[in-house]
Image (cartoon, rainbow, N blue to C red; front, side, top):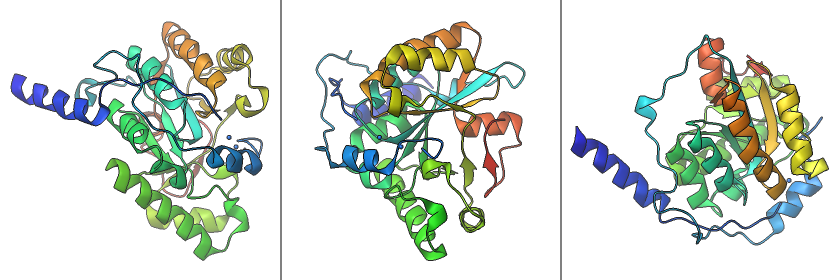
Length: 272
């Protein structure tokens, strides 16, 4: 058993690599993940996914086998749209410090550019959801276009991380019966939110932190973005504060498993 655990850690260590140094950058939401112009702007920046210099050698390593969720205790699902991005690793470290998880809603076109970071999310035990391939308003697309956006983004994530997403965070929170039907066919639940930090707009760590803590509720799904250094800074404090208040930091799928029987494909969830 000791050897198995050691081998498991070694495998993860190889995926994570030796520590790394954060670069800071920055976009989505219909009420609100940021406007599409911000997403295009962010995607146009140079793709950087380099090892950083100031991390401990072990970085983030966890063992999902020993993780337990108590359905009778309060829980909250932090979600991060538009990544992977420069803030993702900082958020992962904060989560790991409290044995927490979150859901990172990744744009398919960004995943290969941030492949190491995407794999770190999977290795830490947090959830990867699809946020479409190119971040369009899915409700305005034809059925064929919606299917292509979802299937191609799911494929990009699975090829890069080995994880097949079971959750869709629709860009702008925008859905339609067509989107729901295709999600039913693909076996994907739809996760929107009931707490919106509007971090893409305010770009202030203290404001983001206070909004999360003031609106934290059992079963809440919180919308953030891992593109911005201000969000990463806020999460480094928010995650610890939520854990001190007794919240379990869970992924959307963990929340739905504990409170909604795992969720139903094609159904839209705002909280649980």
